[in-house]
Length: 581
Image 1: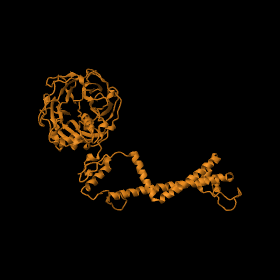
Image 2: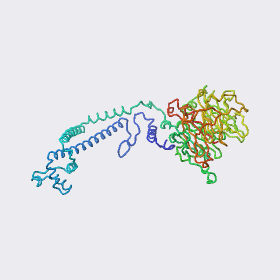
Image 3: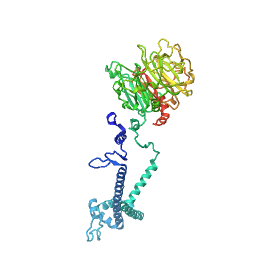
């Protein structure tokens, strides 16, 4: 199953176990499929007892080989020590032999002399040393000739004799070997033991899914305006200080006129973070929604562009991607399994380029996982979807414009009632000439103490308290209040995000440069100010065409887990769509 549909990647062993489990799922005899655990001419199907016995045989062999290795080293050292003790006992004869030799080779041969007759130099029988002992004696320092050093050698000789006897007894006694195996296992348990994280279920538990064998890690996903999508671990982008230049997240586009290929003008259009078990909704600009698990998006490096969305999702070639949102795994499972909408039902709110806003229950989009997707927004001719967010009943919606104005209203039955999947939307706010909508954010009921992060295209940003942006009633003529002032000519607001002090944000530019910063490093000031420098550009004139296009939250590591309730809230905040300004 996994070989046919997925790359094994780093979960090779887990996938193999999943395959063997599926093969033997109907087997009730207690045997499992482990095809290569024994070194035999043909594969063997083993019971659990046979697996454990083979493992014990393996550990027994390891312990015996280790003991023999130590025994060999101890015997070798004992042989050397005995030769050094003989040399110290006859040190005068050793010195006479060495002084009478022409070179070290002759001295070595003289020390190994074993004739029965008296040596012509010393007038007594030879020392009968081996080659290894002779080498050790020739390398002996004069300081080792003291009585204290002789005592140390004698003590070492006694210790080596005891060690050799103990190792010989260990090799000959199987009971001691198995006790040693048990003691080593207990030591491993004390050092690395932890509570079981899996469950053993009786009976037929069904086939395993990819979520069962894949870790729910943090990831960041990018989509280019050329339709390339990829997934990267969030750890590939390191945290940086404020006012830095960042690192490349995708290959840099060539300036206009230098390259006329489609690849040269392909820039980042969408950038968001999520967890690998989340359900990712891809919203086409024609209002069609597609859904797939995040782990099905191919993993790629920072320098690659990824896979075409037309190949991965089946999007028409003339359809662009308007936005991307991710639904936490627990919430999506509750939506799929529920038959009625609860009071805290999850909604998806979508907004078009011309400011048409629509709220739809997420339960109405269960079938978005099918190949051709489903229609989610009925748009007038010439308009297309630009933004999408997740919200619950009673949450506030914040819409910001390029000139720094923003409107905040509660998504209740008065301002924004739920509509059917194929319905159209309502006008969100009034826009003066030369102004356009740039972003949409959702504030939950408990976000009164949070701050709003506003970032401009040229890298200026700030935080201000969300309470400074008062709620009002949504009408087609509401202009909103000022939330950002601009100090650079031609600059405009690019995004507005709700953040906390311990959050981290990632910013990406059109050329694919990614920055990761802590929100604590960004000043909290009033809403009608210009802010501080967040992105430091290269030399003047080299990247004038590059601008910041999106800012997203990084899911907190403590909130991620297969069974963690915090993962839902963290991913709901971080997995927002990213739009090309």
